[in-house]
Image 1: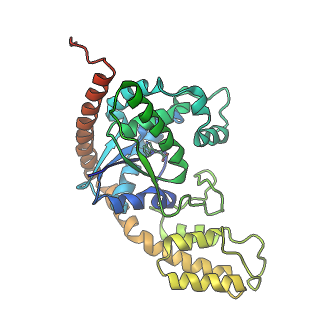
Image 2: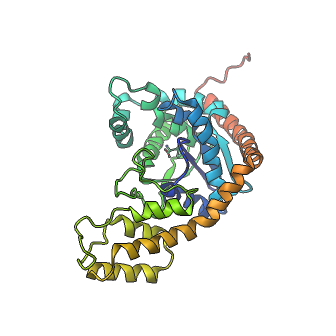
Length: 333
Ligand code: TRP
């Protein structure tokens, strides 16, 4: 059975972007693969080191989000990054195999640095988080990595690190492949490529019906369409991107698109149908979310079982790494 590793950065509640980017693939793939899902608290601390309370709370929120959408702890090993110290150890060894120049070229890191306004304040830990992410993946010898589009450069960098390690020290690691969700990058409700809590352009998996209504009714549509009788554009139109992603009634979606392009449907009708679709989709998820918020012990149980399994695998990998790197000394402590 092929091995999967993927993960979440616990900095907020999981949202619809996470769903189409990676959660949906987790649910689909959990039966056919040996799946590990990592809760990346160490990575979250790289740009939230001064806000540990936020990371701590969102570790639980991310775990609940996974359970709520149907990631099944019977099938999936769900674990916490900081509780597997072998990941930190492997990160240090991988850091030797990556140049600063290569990290500077990573497009995702580049845009995050710009966005966060890091200049002289760029933490080394944040700069090198792709190296730590390579260790996340390779500590369990992950072969497939279901992720959103923004994460593909990190998987590419992981492949390079694996290749370099194998050529210098001998064959230990697979070269993992990224698998991107059915919608590579879900835009925010305002059409912005980046979803962000501070902009308020995000729909969370736990949002209630009223919040969904408010968010959808204020969504951006075709900016050039002034009257409902103007022919409108459905390409790149956030309302239709969301319809395609969350409305399973394709006849309804096609009819709306046709009428939108002809100028025979108003934004309100298109949005009201989207409110319906998203609420139907989220109802069971929202309910399970609430259940696990009230049953923290079940969440802890999943994590404890996962940590144990991940630790065994990680120890095994590090034994192989030490052997390959000739630091498996004949003496002990
Ligand atoms: N960087 C990912 C994100 O922001 C989270 C993550 C951490 C991850 N480690 C990973 C994803 C390993 C895939 C594989 O969503």
